[in-house]
Length: 188
Picture 1 (cartoon, helix red, strand yellow):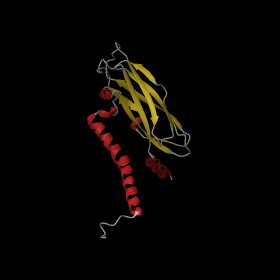
Picture 2 (tube, helix red, strand yellow):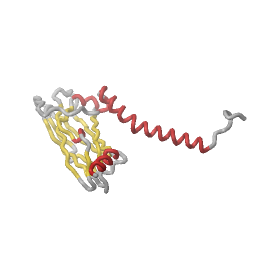
Picture 3 (cartoon, one colour):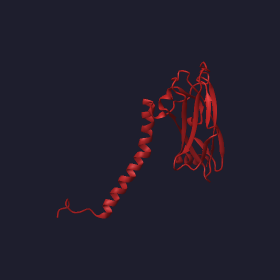
Picture 4 (cartoon, helix red, strand yellow):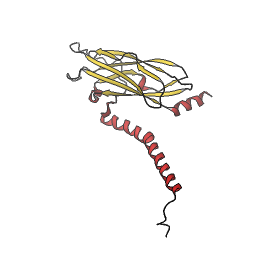
């Protein structure tokens, strides 16, 4: 038997499978998330909202109609914090500015950093939904047991299509363990 026809040892096969698995997991967390954000940014798909709109941006309020805006909050699997919208629904007129508060609490015994990622539904309202101020623009670092109320100021453009009567804004809270570790080291 030549070297090419000899069966591989089980240890070598297992090692190769473990390396492939580690590579796939690394690709998912290091490669796919930034790629997803980039694709959503350039195409506008995925319901990702845009960056901050100036509070000075004044728009005529259309009082002839009203929109229902629902707020949802969820944690990713590795995020043990408490996270919720303090108001689950508001009714607004297109062009009218509104504020909704969100609550977070670090329920762990360690300093942690998180980032909230927004998503709108239906996805094509992203061009009409404008956030003036949002906790999702910044990372949140909380000490053990610390809690915080965070505002989100927004308005829906008065050019939003007539058939839109309800919008859902959901936030997913992600754990950023590397950021928290570096901030703890900076304090030392």
